[in-house]
Each structure stands twice: as C-alpha cells, then as structure tokens.
Image 1 (cartoon, rainbow, N blue to C red):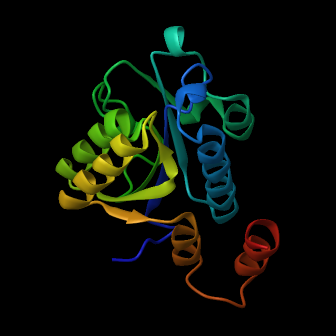
Image 2: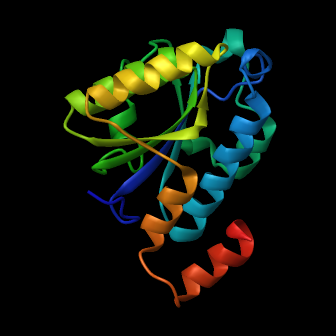
Amino acid sequence: MRMCADQSVLLVIDIQERLLPAIHQGEEVVQHILWLAGVARRLGVPVLATEQYPQGLGASVPALRERLDARQFVSKEHFSALGEGHLLKAPGGDRHQWIVTGTETHVCVQQTVLDLLAAGRRVFVVDEGVGSRRERDKALALERMRQHGADIVSREMVAFEWLQRANTADFRQVLQEFIR
C-alpha cells in the first residue's frame, strides 16, 4: 500500500523542549520532522502534534509551535496518544493512513502506533523522524512496530508517494523547496 496525500495525516508525538535534550540526535530528529511537516503543509496533508504532560515536560519546541495552529495540538497524559480518546476526533484524525514521527520511539511512539494499528489504521513510522534517549531502544521499537504491521519508511519515501508523479506544480514546488 502506498501513502496517499488525500488519505494521510502526519502525527508528531511529543517534540517538547524539556525532553528533546535527552534524545539521541534530537535536533536532527526535529529537523526531519519540520521538513516533513513543511511538505505536508504544501500538499494539504493535516498535521497533528501531541504534548505529553506539558506542565512537566514543557511545550513543543518553538520551531514546531511556529508552524502549527493551536488547534493542531493535543495534550495528553497517557503514553499512547489515543489514551485520552481525543486524537481520532481531531481535524484529520478520521484519515486511514497515519505517518508517525516523534519521541520517544520505544514509549509514546510505539504505544500510539500499536493502538492505531488496533484501531484499524495503516501506520507508517518515519525512521529518521523518531528518536529515543538510547539508540538500542529506538531499534527495538522499530522492529516491534514492524512485526505488528507498521511500515518503517524514510521522509523522502513519504514525500514522493504523496506527490505520486513528476511534472506537476506540487512536484516542482516540493522539489525546489525541500528536495534540493
């Protein structure tokens, strides 16, 4: 199954100020997420972002907050973003394909992915768009999610599948702004 822009939602899990410094290559993970969020915005793909207990872990990093509207953020206390029951009701939450990024891969990302799969959604986890404090935890979580039916993909795989073809205005804009 290919990812389609008109069926997808991009989910950014817990890219928060106080958590990010502990994430292995955290700044790189954020840059990959921002890149993908930019492509999503260009192609009209909804973006949702969660914040895990923001009173304790702080808000999302400023670069993400600047790019998204307040209505795109969902606060949570459960590790799974589906725990509170609000995510699937948020704008874009009814879409069938979920492109998932965020932290930590082996905690909130993994639990959310497993719950999305159980809810009948098709899930694609962006390898360079997820992070954990320890590389081993990330690797184990990616393998577990794959075993349960999630596809592990790269950001460019997402972008090119969303685009579907060359020689369109969208392709030229994404190529110029994000690929080159």
